[in-house]
Structures are given as structure tokens and as C-alpha cells.
Length: 268
Ligand code: ADP
Image (cartoon, rainbow, N blue to C red; front, side):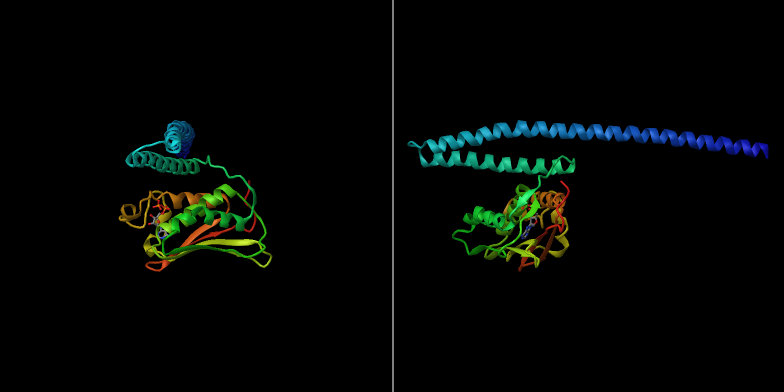
């Protein structure tokens, strides 16, 4: 009996020692991960500066040359316009990649303020209207009268809306793109939906398109361009603002992306 007792005691101590070792390893691994995460955001911040500064200078000087006028062959003007447009495209991409990285590492913050949803929607439409000029697509807003203001991040909400309306326009050859706002009986906005009559999205891709770098199918980037980052960023931003973002779609009929505004303002 004594021997059995001693054996049990020894086993228990061995188990305790093993557990302590494991805990120490876990603590060390967590520290290591935190260091790596810190290094990553540090790298991103530095890269963002290093990439954006020269790009802004390329875009700025191209614009300067274009504005200066003077006699210049038309072909040369086209070249400079291409330098500027590609620079702007690259800047947009860099901003998207950085946004994703910032959300993932928890470094993206939202700034709450008073937002007039109706004005926001009309502003987004005004900004994108030129894209449908001369096409068989109409872009319109359906906004209830006399809505109350909400508490949200206006800049980020606009970013999400521009993304959704930009997509709707990109994937709609004819028909309409409508931004429809609904409000409750008190006039508090509840949902903002972007409804299009475009190509639609197959049911089995409705989840995947919200993942970074995912598109509805392999031909999308060839036919329409894009990187597949917009919806991933939009969903992350919505989550930060306390909103839900979901989609319904019928292939060949169109898609509806709906932002559900929170009943209570998100925590700052
Ligand atoms: P991108 O537009 O750069 O490809 P997004 O993340 O914004 O990236 O969209 C991912 C994919 O979802 C698109 O490539 C497209 O296949 C699909 N998609 C998004 N919005 C629409 C829409 N309104 N109609 C049809 N397909 C869409």
C-alpha cells in the first residue's frame, strides 16, 4: 500500500511538472505571437508611408503637367493621363490592402459622429453618377422624408456605400441601381440596401465573395477587373460600426446588398 501511495504521489508530481512546463511554453508562445503582430503592424505602417509618398508625388506631378497645358502632341497627353490613372489605381489597391491588414490586426478604429443618412446616400449617388452617363443604367436613391440622424462613422459608412454602389454599377449592364433606405415609424433609419438588376451571383458563392481576394468566379477579374477586397473590407467595417451586411441574389436578375443599421449606437 505504501509503495502504491508513493507511486501515485510521484505520478501526480510528474503531471504537475509537465503542466507547469506547458503553461510556461504557452506564455512564451503568446508573447512570441504578440511580438510578431507588433512587428507586422509596424511594418505595415512604415510600408504604407513608403509606398504612398512616392505614389502621391507621381500622381501630383502628372496632374501638374496635365494642367499646365501648352502645346503637346495628343499621344503624349494620353501617356501622362495613363501614368496618373494607373498611379491612382495602385494607390487605391494599397489603401485596400492596408485597410484589410489594419482590421485584422485590430488597428482600424472608427470615429462616431452624427450622420444624416439621406444626405450621405445622395452624396454617394452624386459622386458616382458620372459613371452611368450615356449608359442604359439609371442610378437613383429612394430615401424616406424626415429621417432622424444616426450615430455612426460617416467616413467609413460612405466607404462601404461607395464600394457597394461601385460593385452594383460594375456588374450591371442595363436596368437600374437603387439605393433604398428604410426607416421605422419614428423615422429612425433601419436599413440601407443597394439593389441592382445586374448579372447576379450564384448561390454557392454568396458566402465566399466576402472573403479577401475572392470573386464570384475565375472570369470576373478578366471581365470586370477588381481584386476581391472590397466586400471583405466592407463587412469588417460594418462589423466595427455595429451593422450587419448581407446579400441576396438571383443569377441573371440582380443582387441586393443590405446594410442593417444597429438599433443602438456602437461602442466608441
Ligand atoms: P472586386 O469587386 O474588386 O472583385 P469585391 O470584394 O467588391 O471585389 O467583390 C467580390 C466579388 O463579388 C466580385 O468580384 C463579384 O464577383 C461579386 N460581386 C460583388 N458585388 C456584385 C454585384 N452587385 N453583382 C454581381 N456580383 C457582385
